[in-house]
Length: 229
Ligand code: 6PG
Image (cartoon, rainbow, N blue to C red; front, side, top):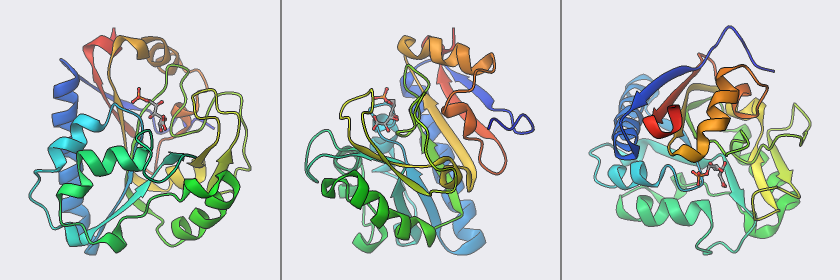
């Protein structure tokens, strides 16, 4: 359900590089605030290609990696080292280049299959909530994580197995609305002309999966001019 009391806040930047820089800065500020508040920073990573530039910037960041706990919003059911895995992208761009304690990196075991991986990750997520920051992308159809239009899931379920996803691969695992919304901050990264229609639908109030993720205090959307027109 879209919570009209928590509208998205739109922040337009000239291009994808500027979005990546703004995203990296926001993530690091969120980490500083969380670590000062609680001694740790629980972040959920976005998949796809959009966040890669921001992840590469974070590889050079000066922060206390011992306080970070890294989770994933979704994962594709592919072998753990497959180049199309969201966790492989995040590791190659960022996580393999920083001293993050391995026990604080929580990839989704999607190589085990959607049903088994979802069951296993529910236990992981149940002990992680609430998150400090959830990063998300948006698909051209308005999907986010692996929550796709026209697919429904049990609302109370923290982590869903996803079958017949319209974006390959068809088998996926995704955090559900309940888990994604249990976060102090939501940061959505949107770049490129291909996302224009989804952005327009979102702004006009269409009930898209991405528009139902508002966190505890509303979502911030970092968007470049190509996607915003
Ligand atoms: C995935 C992502 C997915 C992604 C959007 C945008 O596994 O594909 O989780 O939700 O964020 O599809 O993808 P791009 O950033 O590649 O445009």
